[in-house]
Image 1 (spheres, one colour):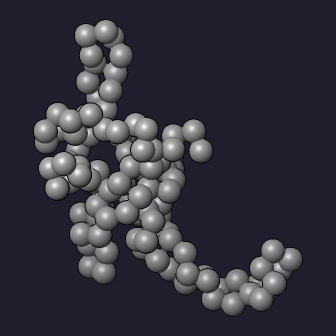
Image 2 (tube, one colour):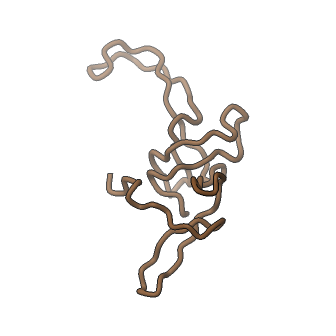
Length: 113
């Protein structure tokens, strides 16, 4: 599983409303093999009024998508590409796009959050 939180992915399969749409990965559930992508697979949830949600009502939120239905987006190539891990000569491992061998920008992602 090479998709991590903060990566930009494109939906390659699934609901036609979201097919081809790109978004940032908000969370990854490794056990279930699902990812939560910003702006993709929007569902309506009926919420009861509570202390945190004073008004209640219908709330729209993202639902998880299976990880096989998304692919990482390579900005320089302008198309989706799988991510593979390569070992450098100094022994460190980096994530690179398979399409052009470019390193995934780690500083853009919020890995710790």
